Image (tube, rainbow, N blue to C red; front, side, top):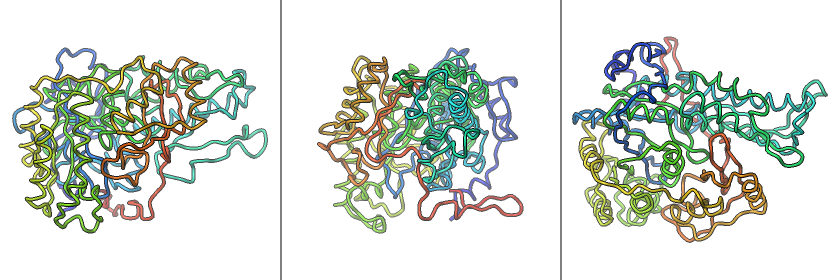
Length: 554
């Protein structure tokens, strides 16, 4: 059996100019990055008049068994085009940290991939470098301001802006810098986040253009004064230079699937520590260039989909037409307590115990957000007919159809059943709504997500979080939506609570404002904004030969 990277390397790609021309894009709006990648003029979203239908792909709570959300998104877009529906694909960009850490790649899999796969998984068009550079320029200007006399009266003990690097590195979570005497800066405690957790990532993804980008960057809160007033990037004079670094990064990246479906891969991760959706510019452009736009949000529907609806859609005016919830029998058996090594064996009891995880995600999409949905069941050779029938029967009881997906093995052809159901759902009326209204306070918004989406019994705020809540509301940030930073493995804040726990206490240990992005981040449990590498990182298996051919990405 060929590996993902072998399949991708054997693909016959079309020149990206040909893909762009098929979308009706003018030459002056296409900026090629080599033969198979291009950036597209982001200002086009303000010129087009048509609006396609948006399909969101989300999933059950992730497990080591894998679910295949990106693979499903790619295969679905290919299948819809095969049905004669002009469809665009919108994905998030892979981050180097997870690629070299756990995932080994994030461009789909099998015969449902976006290409050039190696480029997408590595440096691509440099967007993440630009985000990291803008982030760290702000950090440098902040510390330089303090060194040069601190006219803004910034309290070094209350600096909230951290440096960023696009690599998992637990050693950098907490550091002390500015050591070595006066000429080397002012000593203080500091730390790094992974680049994709930077507020700059969210700002880039939510900005509608350069002017909006600059305005958002200027609003970023970097710390507080001795008298507890917020200090912004605008006050430091950093917004213009940061926007200059991001001038090209804001333009969506155009690539293609193995079957030639046009795909925007732009911004996005992670939904467990940030807002976890690709850029507004990419999604809006896809909707204006196609009849349908298939997009995805990170991790399970309690994370990525919730933030897609409650943050991205709320801010942009985007409205979905249908939702796909991705699951596998193997992953559901894991949620039901089956050991990883036993997932290939029929186990109806474990599947029955794990099904509530899928059913709750489906119920949330239908009842909390008022949207039609379909379950895409990624089929594995070890799945039995009894197991597949059980999933189908339980979903039908909720009024939701199940479509078997075989896009990994068969590409678009393996997603035709799913594509037909998605097209049908897009024609149905929906009653899309948010999980909470704008006028609620910060506490009430957090409780709405925790109780309505996650099924918590109560929400506990630490003493520090209570103080931060009062300060944020006093500073006028109470009207902002909330971004829940929570483990991806469970509805709760405890990664060990698999399946569909309910009635638990969700603990908010810290609150911080991302004023540029336009939301309040609620950190729960032991969630980290700088992941570490696993015992055996994917990097150990990634290599390149003397011809430049890369191996080990998957």
